[in-house]
Length: 131
Image 1 (cartoon, rainbow, N blue to C red):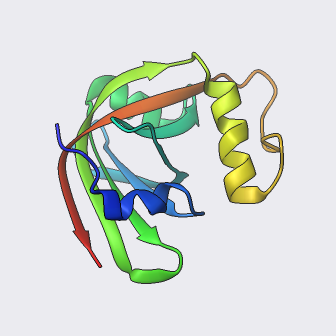
Image 2 (cartoon, helix red, strand yellow):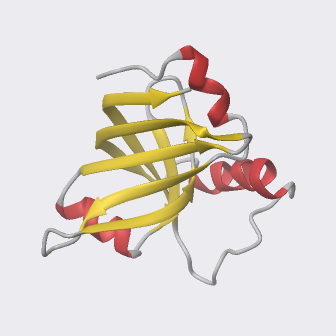
């Protein structure tokens, strides 16, 4: 497992959007823009159960993310990895934390009735970047 280089950790403190790629059942890629976080070991994506990306990672744990610096789109970080864990634990608090960073609000405003939030923990296996 690779670590995220220290000089790119700021991307996880800014409103940096990631493009999260998973693999569809027919082998084609599926890409979704997502909010992203890092816990020092895993790249974290918070989503809801039942979405296409969650169905894809249940079948194939190989994923990739590209993260662009919102202040300089020529500065980016790319992560190829594997989903190490999917957990509901702390997911509601985590989406609220991300809503604070990305939207400036205390609570995630787009929750749907009955929605179950999950955190996808991605182990970085290959990290590339450009500054």
